Image 1 (cartoon, helix red, strand yellow):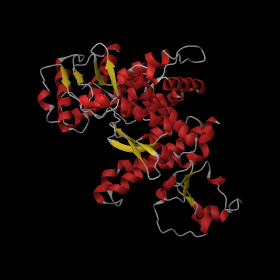
Image 2 (tube, rainbow, N blue to C red):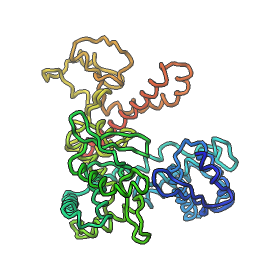
Image 3 (spheres, rainbow, N blue to C red):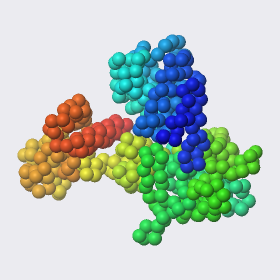
Image 4 (cartoon, helix red, strand yellow):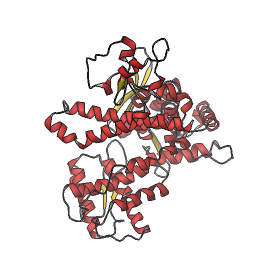
Length: 477
């Protein structure tokens, strides 16, 4: 970030900072802020955040323009603050409901909240004057803003999906007759339709992104700017064809521009080629695809199609076709099971048997009473008492008729461990106690080490999410 620091002019309300990898410059705008205190303070925090480098420049840029929603909320609700010191928990709660009412996208709502939280917690951490002296966030904001049911509406109907596939096939049959931009759009939609990767990931694909595994089958190397990771995913022949076509199409352009990226467009008004940006790709999807090929709902209206719907579609289809949630999480590049869990909750008919599995953590069952021995017989009262645990049950006595365990107190990580929704509150209390005493545990080494502590916390979070999902699906039957 050192090369950017000299460009941060605190006297100006607009900063234009260069981006890497052929992306457009980042524009930071502070003109919307209501007074000089806010402008001076937020510019200071932004500058320090850039210098520290804990957050990426792209994230800070999103925070910058997302923060404007909070000040619009204040204006719409007739709040007049000279600084942040008057912000309370109740006002944050109001802002949560404001975001739910005004924004459809859960991710956009989450970023808007994260932008405010970043500024306030930074000010509190470094004891900057003008910030609240109490906690105004209770940690439930993001869970409320996710509004998981909205995922159901993002799935593409079978009829619309058929229209999309027919349009792509038509484009593929007439590639030579399409313009350069339409050829690029065909390749982009084909890749997203059949891989479910993020739009940002697709636009970062480079000329050597096709690889082969030991069985000589193609893999796609996907680099995620979101969580700074890379992964290799299996792809079908349609994606291979699209990538190879695009590689040949842009070979000369990449050579002239000194870039290894694959996605470019031709700007007619500038008479030159430029890197394809997300906003332009979304425009092309609407104008050069949905409208041109008349992709419609059953009502006859044009569909409101977004690239991210292909990702939701892929995640749901993978689970419905038998892939475990853990495999789907790795395939899609999720950082945790939270996002994957949303796909699993959409269609309960094919989800039930696979989603109850907890892999290395054990097994989730509707009730302990549903357990039986290997012959399918009901367990005796003696065995039931032997297997009972405070937060579930252990199947080892059922299978091997022994009660001794070589790994006591490690049940959460044991494949013999079974838990059910009736123990949900116990797991929640366990997680609450662990978090409350986390620093003491680490300081006094009461819990082994930091790694085990963090793994236990993550495991409890996962178990709670899955139990809540099972409880919800049982209630909806």
